[in-house]
Length: 115
Length: 111
Image 1 (cartoon, rainbow over the protein chains, first blue to last red):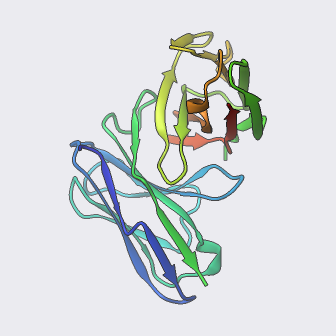
Image 2: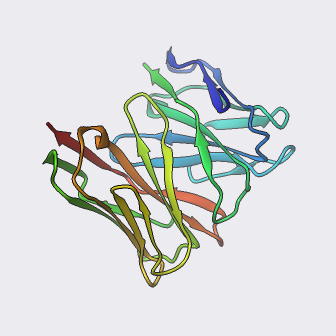
């Protein structure tokens, strides 16, 4: 089925370890996003890519880096994981880009625990 | 950062009852979206409202965008157990070029 695919679904890291969260979409969408979801705080934007070849910081970018590898793939890297980065991470894409009526499609998330 | 406050945070009702969830901000948004999220899944878009005062209906769900485009409401008529989930509002600000999410309303519909 068409959509946004995230890997892995679950991950446990030790403080200081690094890892990359993978995201791919097969809907030919231009824009892609990384959000984190914490209890009681909704979803907060980490980074986004309005189009292939561009990336921009969102609300909470510190401790993360991203790569828009091609139109389909957008990865999120944690260089040195910290317990504060324990969260559920969602990747999303949209066809209309950064427009008021863009429809966002979300992946099913990666649940990350940093111990 | 533009904030969206949702109320109530938690809501537990019996099947067949009506309910309203609110989404409020002091900021003006170009559009307002409502999503529904089930455990272990990502949010799924229900509706987008763009015009101040706009009302959209999706079966038993009625969405309204405030006249000043600062607030929105979601009304569910005759709730069913399948309506259980986390309801998130999200506002798009043209100036910030980002979609800002509220903290959500966790709805539980009891049989």
